[in-house]
Image 1: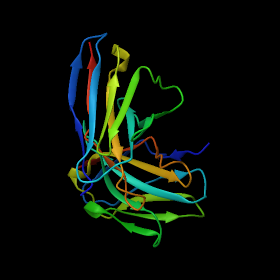
Image 2: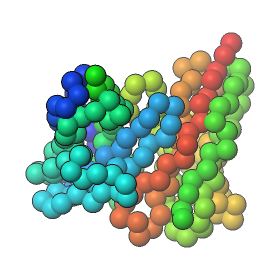
Image 3: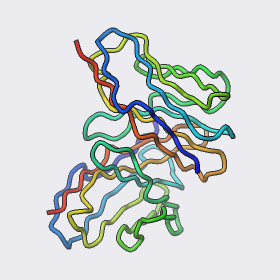
Image 4: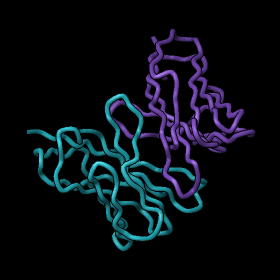
Length: 115
Length: 114
């Protein structure tokens, strides 16, 4: 149980275009999901907390207009990287938790390459 | 500021040897503690977690960790490692009252060789 599915696993896009990444909780409802960014050989940095039916909460230094988050249902959150540039190339990972007594389940990640 | 420290960026070890990966965190207030493993180009897999109760926590793949409140530590151990344990290991902490946010350590690369 507690599976989080993330798509796509890899995406290559041209500079200036937008890319949407989906994060789905398959067997539980998630009122809150988290989006992380990971640079090569580094730890995960929390970008934002996605809240179902309300605005996302962004961490300091993360551009909300650059990284659009939509959490329209209890099982789906999306991250859209708008007007992508090569410096946005990174590994993006989402996570969610079925509840306080459970751990956090992570998606398999999305490798974004902007050329 | 609350922080998680993994002092060892890399730990080389021979197969079948024991290993300990260290994790310390900055505050002794109520915490929830986690260890995750990450294989190349994949997401994170939960190894084990401490939420409450017994301070010795057993997880998957033969790993265990001990919560030490006085030393604010949650070290991960395995008595005998296998080549397939080669991966990146992350310690993560959720402090009570932080809106469910996890703070990650910088990770430890466990490299198991023959």
